[in-house]
Image (cartoon, rainbow, N blue to C red; front, side, top):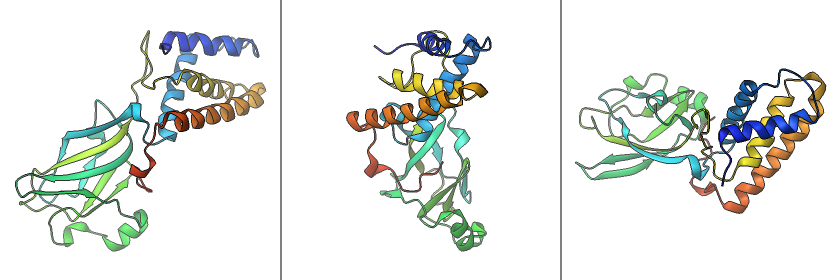
Length: 224
């Protein structure tokens, strides 16, 4: 059984007390490091199954609107955008919208002002920070067509006895939290580096052995 938030904090404090007597290693600070560690693992590894979801209801096309906000995903914030599906049940048009392969700069060269182009069925998208731009912009015929969004979500901050969203990732979270914690103490820079390298190695082995990622489903430019 995975450790809860309080237990993870206690273990990180226990490890750090062996190498430093810094009085600033409080429960509150270690709690922040543990939460940062869980989120860093998710942000650094797209497609982890424990935080993988398909949202069918948040986004729908709006006539002439070519920009959509990732902040709309409030309950489960987007960490990595994996794919967008165009689901037009009225006209029986279904397809996965491919991400634009040329990058943001090339996108801007080709489509400096999307409203100048004809509207129609979405053919491509690109992520720009926390926004998604689509091309072409929808016409009234495409208005209200659902966009199904497949993504990895950012875990909620843990408190009290909350469990981590990552199954059997206790050791990996602990080691990453140690790396973050040690990095705040100038005299512990070597421990910070060692903990970070160990965390990354353990995470890689864990993902490989449990097949947490379906890499063939992850676009090459899913974004940060």
